[in-house]
Length: 309
Figure 1 (tube, rainbow, N blue to C red):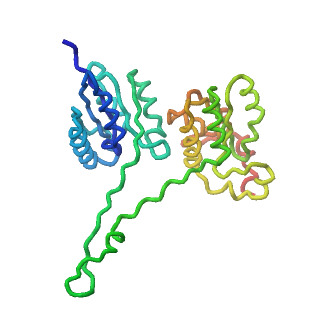
Figure 2: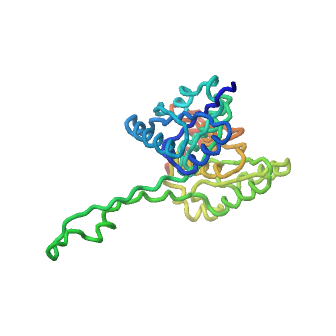
């Protein structure tokens, strides 16, 4: 008698999505495996238990044989705790799209594949639609009229603003060219007081060697030194986290994980990108120190001396 296959499924916000249901139904064709759903408690165990109960009911209504449990708030820990190579044949991870998913920004599918050695299937699901409820409220008016038709509109919950992309048009074009080229991509990240053009010679060398070079800038980077000199204020009020998210958003749109090369603060950003599991190879050239490194060399202090003036 053949052993029954078992699949570990990891999801939270997308646990009831159409995309995940369709994937599990397809996977269940033929051999009819059992599924174990793990919901990481990223927003607390009470919320995760409610999500798990809802998802199990929803999946079973679609004829999917599934059990489940609540996992650690850290999705990596939750998966490692639940993964049993003697029981599970593969792992299916369901996430939101790249621009909304913290799991993808952390490179979760790739990191789990490396940690477990298992076959990992990644399902991208659309964000769940917010529920809209109408509240009947009394109003002053003709006798017997207690329902205001406009309450259906005014009672609807406000939607969170859509996260605007920071990708410039020329950066989107670089991504499209890289995906169309079929060549391994290399992303260059510049440091402070520089522009993407500072990588032009490097980009030429890598292009001649058979790679496709991308030289995205920081958010709102001007295209020329003259523009930067005329409007220096565009560089202000940006955190390392915001700049890191900008590069992560660009890299997530590449079909192949790139090599990432950064210099100075760009080297620190390259390390951040590597930590999120988004780079195939990372090179940090004379990187800026990360948080917790207090001593600075005299050369760094000298180079920063003109800044307060």
